[in-house]
Length: 624
Image 1 (cartoon, rainbow, N blue to C red):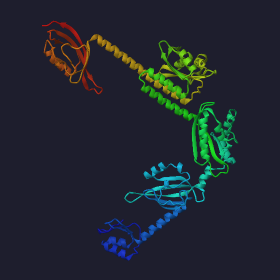
Image 2 (tube, helix red, strand yellow):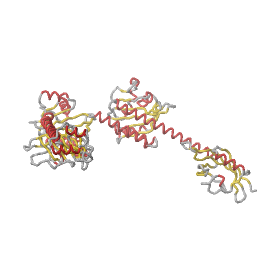
Image 3 (cartoon, helix red, strand yellow):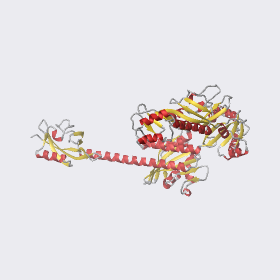
Image 4 (tube, one colour):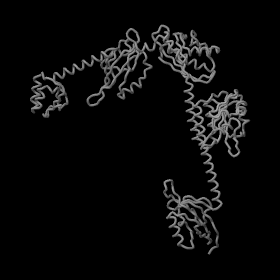
């Protein structure tokens, strides 16, 4: 880079160029008085000049030609690699456009002066315009935004748009520029593959999800192996979903608990077949045979003579159950955090577990290690006559360690699952120790199939056992066992804290009673030795003591005045003191004698905050 020292113009060079305009060259040579600058101009090392007064750049002729050639080469490469090129101004309005059409062209309207979201598209309602406009506001580069539009003949075209922001030399935003590609063939090939070809049928049959293909009337024209197995399983229920049956008619005929879900599915399928939606997803719970969660997806097919939509069912039971268990742990933690007593916490916790896992009732048994008995303390059950009778009979129940489900869990410290209708029980460890006859009594009396119990543990000790019963209790998996162990640990820590709090409360109450027996009052002082609290019998003749020091109280009498000096020096030195004796002079001439003791108080940071202590009236004397 070179520059002229003349203050009027600055010269900048980077490409080798020859000055063809002799008038401009002569002017530049005249301004460039120094020999190196003149030589650089004459040798073609200078391709532009800059006017320092207005900042305008003047390209020399060959530099202008090189720039035009570069732009032409760029446009040629863009045309070879894409189907169109466009530019937008700072308001995102199109200012230039070449190549593949953007938007529906049947109306014959152009795109110049309009934003992308002001154009008409075949799938305009399904495009996430807010997200796209947020990207533009962030000046982000976007790639492969797929849009569906109709050409002038009414044929579907799918285009992909990519763009990047433009900025001026000073950094100001100028707009966007980008490219357009026609991806119609690729997308349609992917979405409307020949589903009836042997290769495609093999792929469908390999899927674990249940998949079928519907025609324009909703008739099932193709189904994979998993779907055919589903149809065979429900054929006895009158729900025929085999090939050749009409899926929409079946949805319209369903009644009972499945009616609402069936109506929603039928509406979604009809919208997809009609082309109003590209995808419809619906999640529902079904428990006719066994509780499970299913997510149904309906995808639109285009340009196929027969197929119009693909319906698939995917079992998401495990995912849902994991989500439920995670929420249960959070609910339990919240119950224990909000509760101020075991009476409030345990019923709420048992209810949360029962409702989340769909169990009928639950009980908490407190462990008494001295008597080796479990005592029933808290219960909760759903609204049912059977459950109510069972809970009523269970009131006040006790269970020996090692007996029944709860007793076995208390001894082993491990969760236990048992089915009363079978002769098998499952416990993670030491399953051979289960007493099936005693362990199944609770669920047998309730005419239920299962019982599940797990210990409540803290500091390596079993504090109690939580036991639940239900008509159906699935075999616990690792995730459920992990959850109940977490609940048992959280509850154990809570119960242990409550025991410590209750013990501390009792100790404080006992201490208060002892203080009341050994003194007439208790008191507290601030850091200036002024009384801030006085509980008990007041000192006669002193009036209100709050806000005053001991030596500021009226009618105070000491046989030796030096005692005041010594007492003041002790408290200012923050020494504990015992049995400091003084008297008060009553108006009738009598004296009352007292004895107080005190010790200094410090806050959590070790700062002195005052004194507290006790006082006692020791004798009454006659007037002097």
